[in-house]
View 1 (spheres, rainbow, N blue to C red):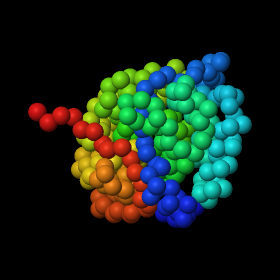
View 2 (cartoon, rainbow, N blue to C red):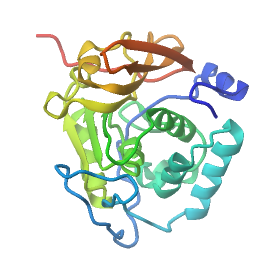
View 3 (cartoon, rainbow, N blue to C red):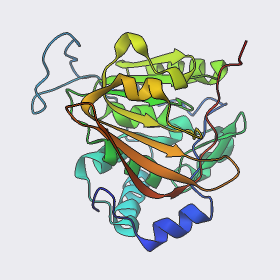
Length: 272
């Protein structure tokens, strides 16, 4: 599928409000055996995409279901990004889904996981990730850690994943789970994602998994020239637009509207 091409099915699903990002309340089912680790090259060293190695857990749990999920995404939506599909294949979604939803862990649908949140539909995770164009040397910021699933998918493509969650219990839970399962390079911060993460900017890519009514200026400021930001924008009560924003080498911003979606609203810190 092209960078902005979408099928009629995608549009209909979006209009029906099936694409809703969410977060996790309960702990997922732990893996039966510790995942194998790979060697991680420290962030202050140059990474060559073709030789990069870093800790990425591997599990055979429910592997056939993962393959079926990925094949469905590829066929139903014509998404042919091999690296992203491989990332989706490698990350066990059931690790990030509560016990009550385990039978549906690999269904192409959002699932409730506590705190009035959901874990995103697998297709929308794959689609938004594909839009970022990640390679191992790139640094990515995620706003809205939620369950940690999206961050884990990003960490399959680059070790430099920074994720912000404003709901403290969710952020703590995601941080603990990601560490438990072997995603050692992901950094999770409790804070207001609207402000970005000043200490680690600039970012090559940004993904926002909750919807503000406008694009935050701090995020644009922290986006590296040549980078892109994928974000849903719009009112909470209406269908929003998924937008890809690019910053060229001169710092000029361009905006591309991709498709209608519906996400939970971006939560801000209380104003004093």
